[in-house]
Image 1: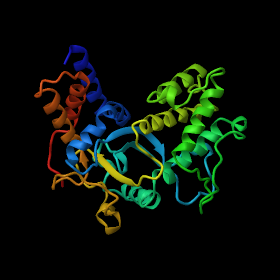
Image 2: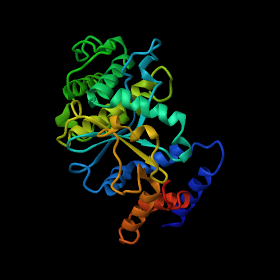
Image 3: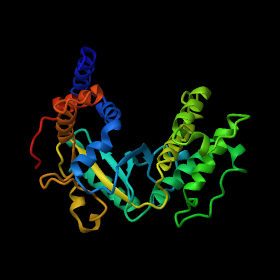
Length: 314
């Protein structure tokens, strides 16, 4: 690596060991381009076809509507990464310390995923909530032309039918804010997130609390870019993955029968979750020993190896 990359590596590692710094946010960002590759490497043939990154920090819709509903879903459970293969959408929970595993809080989190996600589809848990957030975030101006929902579920949440509703909502908003343009999937195929980010930046929606929820337009763009790969989202089932420092079982709850088929473990017999330590070894082996030029991968590998020396799980 270059001297500059070595300095970044050293800074990130030092921040990890510094009290009161949320190092998980830094590692989350660095892992994003490689998380699908890392998981696929540790699972061998468990995924169907290519595993693709879709988006991150999506809000999980609660199966029961709380008495006080936070506007636009700003609070509540959020999943770190959302990935997909040809058959399933994977929810990836990142834990950068073992302190977040095998605790009462970890068991509670596991219970929420079981209650809210197991046996459900992407549309039921994430898609409908995202459209509801977008409809509210852009105000009453859009409500007349916003894709019509098809009613409500038992908890009182509005339901939309399929990926098409997401596409219609996205381009309705994009075209209103770009007068004279008539964007559609043919114009922006594979570049919807990029166009959404351009609009968000231009209108400074990130700078005010009153418009910050409009950033969800970027998430919608990422979902449409995934659909461009000739895949679907709305009706796909969900599975849960944990990515932890050493591949420990994050909660005893995951050993229960009801989690079978929903919680996914890696291929190694001594691993009960996917491992950051194994990820560091893999990236080094591929991009250093394999003589492939990729400074970012080597940077991430060095950081993971410095923070998580390989050790056996308990």
